[in-house]
Image (cartoon, rainbow, N blue to C red; front, side, top):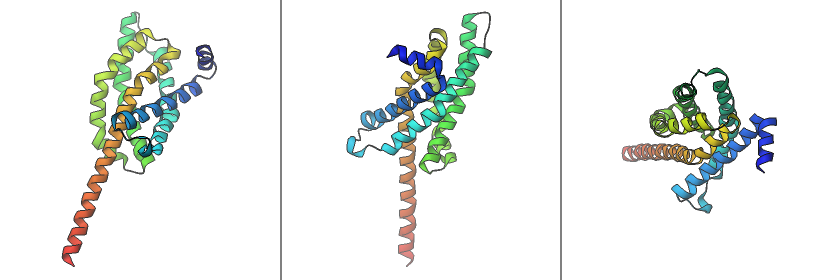
Length: 195
């Protein structure tokens, strides 16, 4: 199985990484719904899992594959340690802030809600949490993991991260739903009193 996967990584890297990422983003959402939120199978939101898998496979997987190739080709110094640190700095200074913004905006669009509201509500917290985890993960990734396996390494670590992102994304949607319901109730109450 590992040889087959390695062969696919070499022959069709973007497609292989995209499919792998879609599966693991879906797993992260299932973990969020079942292990964190404890929804149970009967209340599991399949559409939410589908949105996560769709985003992982069509956006993050291909983007991360191309990004890691770009860093491998363009960020190189005489010292291996300097190269690793520079790649982590580029990844966390450029890619991570954009990727989090694209993720939250994409989820909002797929859910039919406002990307601006989603970003205002969740971006800062997600980026702060990112900086507590990912610089260290990427340090290991860029130092020890071969290029062909970097997206897979990130995807495996991302099961927990995607669980967090899915939960954060869902919690924000729930908060908006509660706020909207409160506003609707207040308006209905005002209308009732005025009639």
